[in-house]
Image (cartoon, rainbow, N blue to C red):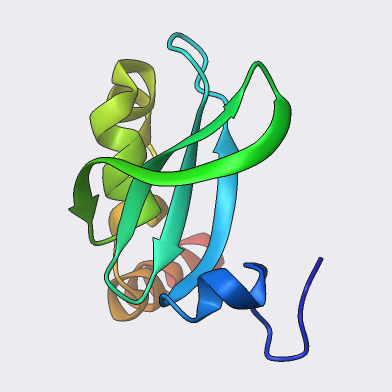
Length: 107
């Protein structure tokens, strides 16, 4: 559900700076829940066996992005994400890279 302000967290969680929570299913490790907030991204206790209300209690440290959290939790993600040059490049680098590819393909 998306609230009128664009957040997916319920209003009582938004008051704490939370924006959304995601259920993440890595290929080789246990699934987990993570929350994005104005402080950063962090793992939460989530649901027990997919049932019941979400437990929003933070587990571990706060990361700057989902990318950094998942990279820390999943060895397969960490190994494969480096093969995706667009995934770690910033916008200007990606734009430059796309322009280079376009000019190379037209030659």
